[in-house]
Amino acid sequence: MTVVAESSLQLQPTALAMREIGGWLRSAIDHLDDTTAAALFPRAELAVHEACMNVIEHGQLPAGAVVDVNLVLDSTELTVWVRDSGTEFDLAAVTSPAPNTLQERGYGIKIIRSLVSELSYRRIGEQNELTLRIDFGGTQNAQ
Image (cartoon, rainbow, N blue to C red):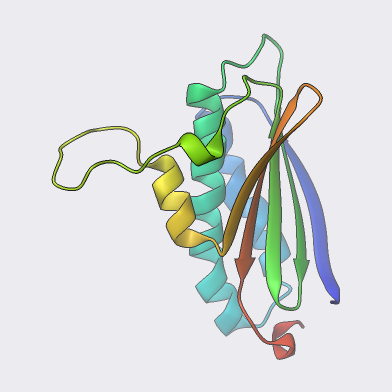
C-alpha cells in the first residue's frame, strides 16, 4: 500500500459547510490518474456528503461541536473517517426504506452503502466514528 494523499477537514455542523467537502476531496483525488479520479470523485463526494448530513440531521450534536473528516488515499482505495461527538447510534439497526413506499427521508445510509465498498461504525469514548472505504482497484492509478 502506497499512501498517495492524507488530509483532514473540520466542518461546522451546517448544511452550508458541506460545500467544503467537494474541493477537499478533489485535492486528494487529483493525485490519481484522470480516469480513476473521474470515476471515484462523484462516489466519494456523495457518500461523504450523506454521512456528514446524517451527523448534522440526526446526531444531536452538543453546542459548539464540529464534524471531523479525515482521509487516506492509497493506490487502490480511499478511506474516509467521519467523527463527531453526537448521540451514539447502531448502524446495524438502520434499515433501508421499504420498496414501493413513498417517503421523503431515510435514504442516507442506503445511499452510502450503495457507493462504498465497506461501511463501519464504532464508538470511541464520547465520539462516533463512521468509516467509509471505497476500493477502486489497480496500483497503476497513482500519479
